[in-house]
Image (cartoon, rainbow, N blue to C red; front, top):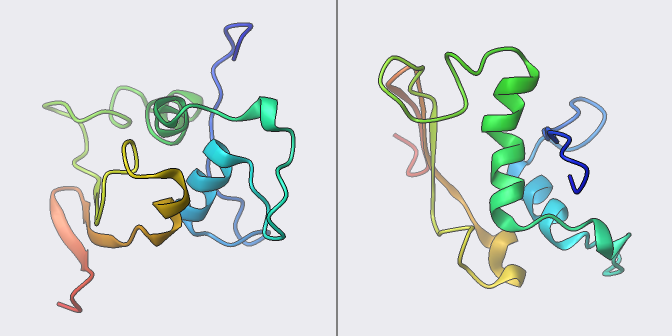
Length: 114
């Protein structure tokens, strides 16, 4: 990133767990399951990490004209979280739950079971 390269992020299903919150947490904390920190100098800021999963991922898929940002004319794919992952204490990021998922403007998942 320091060199100006656009970094994209995502999950590598079925190779790894598809939990995007865990992946985001790993990106910003570099903390492993055993509590150790792997290459701490490679941590991303929270906004860098968020961009890597949204704007940059759309760019990497050549879909930035339809995905990656919330704009008129783009797909309305949105995930609503239980807390603000940009401001919550870092160690609380893994506690974040998905409240709702909206795909193409339609609610396809609600955390309350509806």
